[in-house]
Length: 327
Image 1: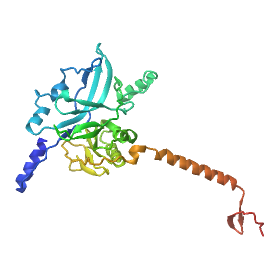
Image 2: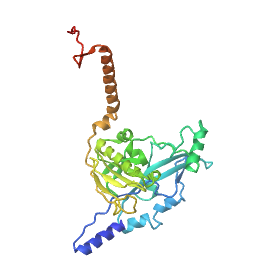
Image 3: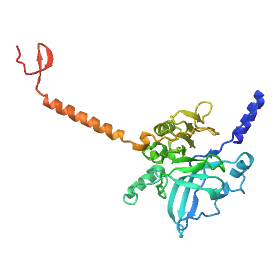
Image 4: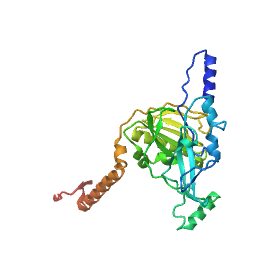
């Protein structure tokens, strides 16, 4: 945000014009923004107070709160790892979350990711088939450790449109590749102003075209649901999308590469409150088309069977035999 101010002032001085700079009401950081997990007591849900993440957002530190003090107040949305420990200090459960902070860590509203990545966030049936864990270790070069626990809620997160406002927008919280799973995203849709927010790392794609494919696939959620989306990515594509899937803004360097550091600003339309046909019915068209194809195929096969042997060649021309006696 300080970078935005500096650029605006430089442009004003260079062009000799007046400027008015709208400061962001929301700041969105990607998945894996915090260096460590946040720990809670499983028995009470109480957060352990002395943690780097907690201090990172507190007034005593000179980073997040310093930005708020020097520039403007804002609501922070970012990814967190929330781990719950038993009284013996063992991991009872762990969640990959999109968390909303209106202030310090006491204001945290986490939303747990539900659609987990197999062999990325958990090893399926690892106790039944131990060789799967060994195969993961051989390919990844490290042990998986704990399995993440999937979230279960499909309720949007109400977030004020600006700090202190009573007017709220429903955030559809999506972590990592959840923004490509239309059957899951549609469950969040309500007849109210909403915005899709995706925080992702995309680290496993490295610098490949898979990063571009990911956000282009995610754009279909906007089209299907008529909702705007903003994606904040570490190594992927950070982009803001309109309800029709059009690009409002994206973060790229001068060569067009998304692998760069910087700040992207966007104003997202959130006025659409309609519930689309896809949001109501889901992927019904896919099995319906398959059944239609299957019915037409069976009909064609049966018709071909009934007509077998009724074709002939007459005078060098192939035509069906309708029972007439050849002359």
